[in-house]
Image 1 (tube, helix red, strand yellow):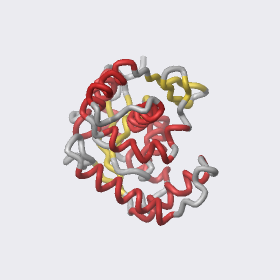
Image 2: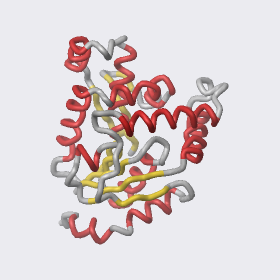
Image 3: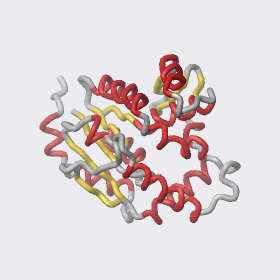
Image 4: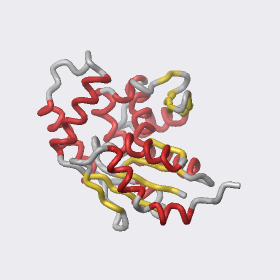
Length: 230
């Protein structure tokens, strides 16, 4: 069974998806982290994203892996643990552009569908319910006011990257989020769009537990599709 959670940045997708997966015993996949890893590697290799041949050569040698340690997921590009590095502002500023490149999406979507084979999983991202898994069993679309999302993102960056975030303001984060929303919604390749059959949840004034509980209100649908454990 596949559950998809889509939505714009800073709506709490990762935290909610992880908590939901833990609650119902599903595998959790953060597809956004996959695109962030490609962006990180492209920056490090100084790849010209406008040069198709250069990009194809880069992707051919690109090595990505997810390792689970003490119940947490760690992301590797080659042998390098980039779990924290991919959350910084440098990668964040480029990831939407990387995610809009067709050959990048083709490579990662194929991986996502391969990992979904024969498992019960929660996938979170931006186009999962519309493009990657159009036949997903349960589709969730998270929304939230830009102001609340900007404050969440600002607080996250301030805690995770205190040095890098010096001088950053909520107003600047709000500006960046608005630009990214516009880009993600209007891009030609796999834009951020709510699936017609998705359950919409506004996360602005809800706690993580309240949001997970709302999703679990669809448990009858979920439970009827989960294989019985022997």
